[in-house]
Image (cartoon, rainbow, N blue to C red; front, side, top):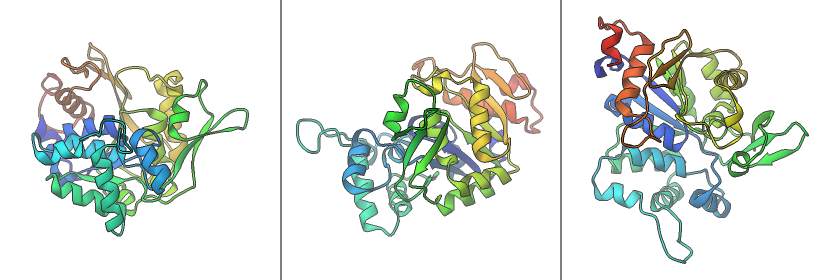
Length: 306
């Protein structure tokens, strides 16, 4: 069914590292017609340590997407994913994060560092950080208090009433332009509050999404999140997106079910990978996207989802 998605000239996927990387690797046959816009607010692990010491954007999700798109096996991809062990200052750091940070210091802007790695790993897909300025995700509680940073937001016992970025930063110009040019936009899967929402909190980015005429497909997680977002129904998550964007834009939702069920908005497909049940199956994702987009392919629905 690859030829159906090949009818799109500018496909944009938005999210964080693991989920977005899975979508991008599923659609990498689109080459440079595919763009991933990546959240840069993570403050945990190796990324968090680098942010605290270097006042940089979060490199981890960018690295994860690049890694999932890299041709394997190759020395470049192995080096990019190498993680230091032992009990030294390097312990726990990922070499890919350090490479991106070093290149950022040598370049004018973070996007240039990302593009250098893309070319080194022979990746055609465009990867763009949501912003090139450091910022943190902040959750607002009903009591009026704030919870600062992604790691703490994910640990909250109760769902926040709102999210914001501190400091408020600008969206990357190329990210907004990609949305304006898009003829298909994909949101998720991934941690809802900490991977999907951060890019939408950028005013220019939200405005571009509000003006799009492209179909917007929301891909839900396979399992309930172990975070405050796990308390949200799919309707509540869609409402959060629309509230931040300023108008309804999501046209289709993909959710996992062993039995195919098609609806006006929410559609159920067998999406779980048989070998790793925690991951979306790449071929099934492609087939489900083809089915809900209803491209004039001349193929019956049974063919699209077989």
